[in-house]
Length: 300
Length: 179
Image 1 (cartoon, rainbow over the protein chains, first blue to last red):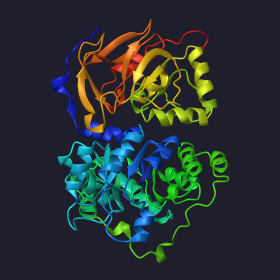
Image 2: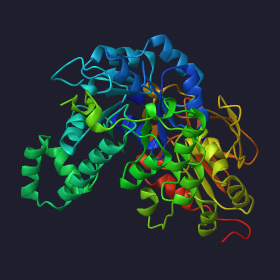
Image 3: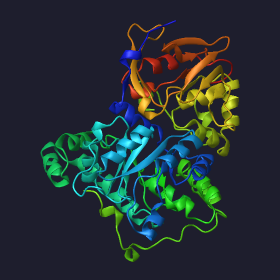
C-alpha cells in the first residue's frame, strides 16, 4: 500500500481548488435563503448549495435602505442546518465583509450587486483570498474583468427580486453571443476585442481560442418558474441561482423541488410540464419599466 | 467526459433511465451527493443502475460519486441511501469546508510517479470490506480504492491533466453477461 505524509505539501486556495467547487455545482440549483429553516427546505428540495443573505432581493427592493452581509450568527445557523455548501453575499468592494465570511468558513462568497455597494470604483481583490468568489456580470467585458480580479464563477446579474427573467436572458445572450463572435475573430481582431471589452488581453485570447469562459457560467436574477430554469439552461447557463422566486412564492417546498427537476431535465418539456403542475402562485413579479432601482447597474 | 473523450472513448451523458442500456460502463461524477441521491430516485435511475451493478457493469465514482456507490455513509443526511455497490464506509466532507480543500500529489499503487490530485470538500473512506483493494491514502486516510468492477476516488482525477486513473478504470473488465 502506498503511504506518504502530505501534510506539508497540501496546497489550499489554488485556482484549481476554487474553480473546482464551481465545476461540481454544474447542472444544479443554488437557492437564496435567509434562515436555517429555509436552508433546510432548500436542501430537502435537492439544492446543490444555498446562498445566505440578510433579506431576499424582493424584500431588499421593497424595504429600501442599506443591504449588508448577513448576521454571522444566522450564517452559522445555516451552516449547521445543512450539509451542502453554504455561500454568502458580501457588498461590492467590501473586502472586510468578505474577510469575515472567509473566517466563518463559508464555501463561496458572492460579491453581489444585490447588496448596497461599499465602493463605487473598486471590486474586491479576490486573489487575496483562499475562499472562492462568484460575481455577477451583464456582458463579456464585465465577466472577464471580474475573472481578472480572481472570480472563480460568473453568474448573469439578471434583475434580482423582480421574478422577471428578461434581464437574465439578455445578459446570458450577450455574454454567450459575444463568446461565439469572439471565436470567429482572427488574431489581429482579438486585440480590438480586448479594447472594446475593456478586458485583459490574455483572458480575451483565452476565450477566443477555447470558446468558453475560463470559469463556470451560471445564471441568476429573476428566475421564478421551472420553465424559467429550463429556458436559461437551454440558452447555455451551466447552473441556476434562484432567489426570491422560491421563498416569495405561495408554496416554496414544491416549487423549489420542481425547479431542481426542471434544471436537471432541462431538455425534456414533458418532465417540465409534469413538475410545473399545481405549484400555486409564483411570486407576482415586476416589469422592468416599473422598477426604481436597477441592481444590474451596480458594479463596473 | 472530456477526460474520457481524450482517451478515445465515446461518452454519453445519462439523464434518463433508458439511456443506461446504451453504455457498457458508468461514471458517477462529483457534485452534491445529497442532490444526486434525490435525483436518482426522482428520475427513476436507482433501479436501472442497481441492475447494472448486479449485472457486472464497471463503474467509477469520484467524490460525490464515491459516496453514492458506497455501502454506508457517515455525516450524510438520514434519508441519503447509497447504492451499496462497493463494501466501503465513507465519511462526507472529511477534510472540512471549501477553504480546507486542497491539491496534492499522491502515491498510487502501481504508478511510477505521484498523481496530482484535487480534493474539494472531499469525502474519505473510513473502512473497507473484504475484496476491496486500497490504492492510495492521504494522511493515512483512504482516498482511492476499488474492486474488480468498482473504482472510487475521493478526489477529482478529471480536474488534473493526468489520465492514468481514467485509464485504470477503462482497463476494468465487465463481468457476467453485460455487454
